[in-house]
Length: 155
Image (cartoon, rainbow, N blue to C red; front, side):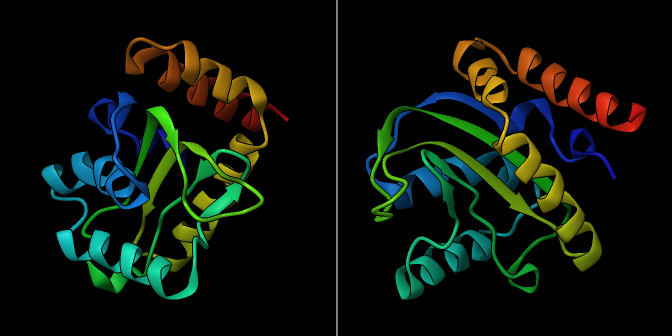
């Protein structure tokens, strides 16, 4: 499985305005909902879970990876990459504010874990976020992910 197979160019959003963390999650998931990959209930479930247990998906400084239970509405595997115009507070004392929202969903548990493993590698790569910061279109972001996958395959 490759991350590039989960990312449609329409899923890469740059300079998104968000009023708060809930709005940021909804905005990051919008393209996948519009494409029929996520049901609106899936997004609602992510937000409800974070309201109940806290911002479990804020993984590191400035980066959120909202994802939820696939049975609540993942219709097709998808990954969205969203750069917020201004960082927002998610309620994570250690990692706020968040500027990058990587919305993810997969109904297959094995694929879900594999994608999360690949994503954690990308999240640990500062050059990935530099590429997102300087991108004015989805193309450089997708090219970066493709190069990272190719480099991993060659090892």
